[in-house]
Image (cartoon, one colour):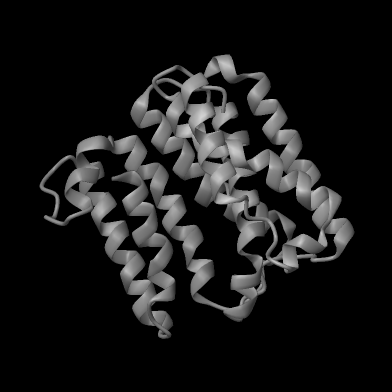
Length: 221
């Protein structure tokens, strides 16, 4: 249900060319989260109803930052600065990972923040060609040296998260399985920043499935 919520919110700015309609769609999800937070009656909906069964008030409040961050997707202005970009990644990917893990079991917030940010950065770099084709300006600085710096920072946060893996409970561990792809993607950017614009960061499907099976069986995300 949490990932279904994320999908609905992520697509809301893209299903219309009218900014006001997109804003209304995001507000609808804000209102749904407010109902979950209040603990009262929640609207009947194929995503909201099951979401209310797995989220507590704190989790619902945390996801509000994800919705607010997605307002950037509605418009065509670039990020104000690098700090705004970093906040966007943390408020979207970081919040999603933290809330998902928290719904499953205990996990250290610092580990989740590092892992979620690294995951969000890797996925964002994969999406650069599609975002540019849609008329967005997805990077504050797209020069090769800036891309290498982003990748290096993401790899450092990934390394830090993995070094503290013991601070994530076994029950919460499955929420971090998507993180396995981060290392290969960011390492590729570090070696070849041109792969970002070329859309050459995706991992082969066969390798992706096999590696995910291995990670899931060992729990070593």
